[in-house]
Length: 216
Image (cartoon, rainbow, N blue to C red; front, side, top):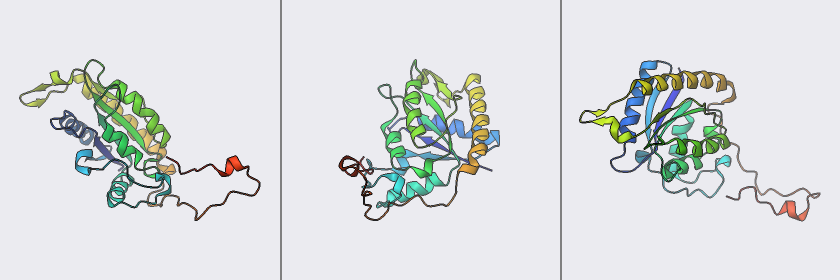
């Protein structure tokens, strides 16, 4: 059975993302297609990206990067539970995505977004190009929760039928995509390493030789 990591993107105190994620993991377990787990970026505690090399080389120098790499590599699909900040995604999510490359490749990804009138949709659309760049595949199906403050009672989050229907559709599509992408994933294969002291071919122009592919 494929594994699904439900990532809580907000790290703020009092965040709505945690109860939303706990609701969604219940939906995922009831769906039955995945082994689902929560990944809380606040608990992961990544600092601002501090690796010297581009992540595609896998030359990780920090223990927190190696730990994050192992968590991401071990999952077949992801659902990002995200708020919207200034028409964009939570900074902790952008940072967490930037840490790695090959670990994200050829994995299905979905969104559960929440917010005010826009329901976090602008954050979703701002995140999609980032996922595409690290070779993830994100379907259009998603769960969008508008006016999130109105979805809580004294008992906690009060989901709607629309939320449940959208969650089921998203999980169905993630399962199809995860199965289709499985041949492209290579579990346990280390990322490509940087060649030692590369030299430009003699035929390269001076301009070509000056390009630093690791610049970030």
